[in-house]
Image 1 (cartoon, rainbow, N blue to C red):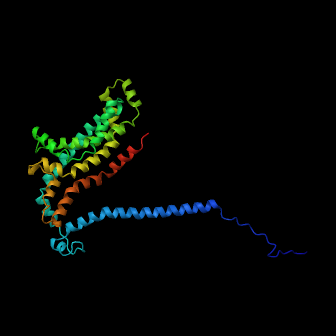
Image 2 (cartoon, one colour):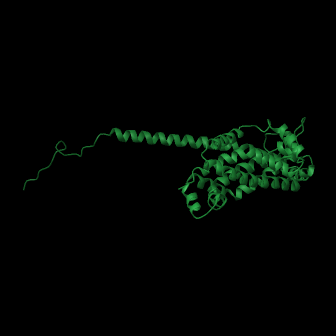
Image 3 (tube, helix red, strand yellow):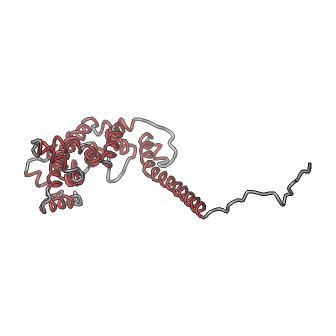
Length: 304
C-alpha cells in the first residue's frame, strides 16, 4: 500500500482576500467619530467647569473668614464659618424680602400665563392681515430694552397711583414679558390641529369653552418652559423693584442684596452670602421640580 505525501509546495492554502476599500473607509469614519466624540466630551467638560467654578468659588468664599480672604483671596482656605450667612440673613431681612419676591414672582407668572395664552389664541387662528401685523408687533416688543421705557413707565405708574405697590410691579413685569409669552403660545397653538376645535364647535362649544377645555390643557408643555424663563427673569431682576418700590418693607431679595455693594469697597464675605441666599429658594424649587420641567419641555418637542 503506497502512501502519498504532499510537499509544502503542493499544499493548497486558503486564499486571503485583499482588504476592500469599503471596510477601510468604514474604519476611517469610525475613527473620526470616536475622535469627534472625545473632542465633544472635552469641550463639554470645559463648558461645565466654566459655569461651575464661579459658583464653587462663591460658596467657598462665603464660608471663609474675612481675615482668611484678605490674606489669600484665591488661595486655599484655612478656616470656615457660618457667621457670614447669619449676618447676611439678618441684614437683608431675608424672611420678609424672600416672601415679597415670591409673591411678585407668583403673581407675575400667573398674569403672564393667563393674558399671554388668551391673546395668542385669536392671533394663531385668525388669518387676516391685521392679526399677522399684530403678532409681528409683539415680536418687535421682545427686542425693546427695559431701559428705554423706564422713564415713561415711572410717569405712568405715578399717574395711576401704583408707585410703591405690588400691583404696579406685577403689571410692569406682565407688560415686559407679554411679547415672549405671545411668541411661545402663538407658535405652539398654530401646530395644534384645527380639527379638534371644529369637533368641539359641532358639539356646541363656544370660543371660550373651546379654549379652556381643549386648547389650554394642550399648552402645559410650553407653559412649563415659559414659566421657567419668566420666573428666572422676575426673581433675579434688580432694576424694576429698585426703581418702583421705595418702601423697605416691600423690597425684594436682590434689592436688599444690592445694598451690600459699596462704591468704594466690596466685601466678598458679606456680598457673596447675600447673593447665595437670594438665589437659594429658586435653586431649591428647580432642583425638586426638575423632572416636571424637563418632561414638559420634552413633551412640547414631540407632538402627534
